[in-house]
Length: 290
Image (tube, rainbow, N blue to C red; front, top):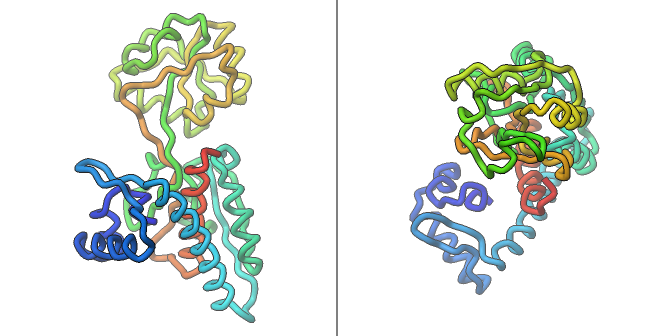
């Protein structure tokens, strides 16, 4: 449900091309029909009641069946369809492979080819038309006639060893770490660009060692060299909590994972995948499996 996604009647109404009063009336009529309140309404926020959460699960199931029926009937008797999707190398971490696998199970006449690339290569493939859409971070969505559909949220955090002086802090401003020695995962990664951009925004150029290592290897390096690193929170949470400490940044540098495509190339099949992926990831996030 769009209200659940945006936590706002006005934004949900806008996306549905409705006025807010019209949407509010429709919701009240629905609540009256089923005999329960679906939303807790306050001056600043809208959230689901317990009944609303259960209702939402039924809605998502019905919508998935609807998407399957719609595509199956529309393409009945036609040749197989194919989607080519480029992704930065984070697909397994965010459950994106599960989205594709589930989509292909529902739409048996659609093949999805997933190509893992860095951000620049993925966007180049989209521009050339060799990819139908890309999974990238919101920071790198290009200007122009592109459609971007947020799937999941993530943010940059500081990671240090448990004995590091900053480990005692729950959160810091990034500038507070400007004199630390940093270890990054290599200049060829999108994460490196994100880290450097955020440090520059904080007013400093980090003293950095670039290492072409996996995230898991970073754990020992941080402890042995008493250094700091910047990682996405989803990756940091997979490291050892016995040896490392995650320190939140007060700037909260948000890096959403988005599905991006050229609007001029939007087709019914791509719309169906977008709707399915958005709905699936909302379920995935709410169930706490992110």
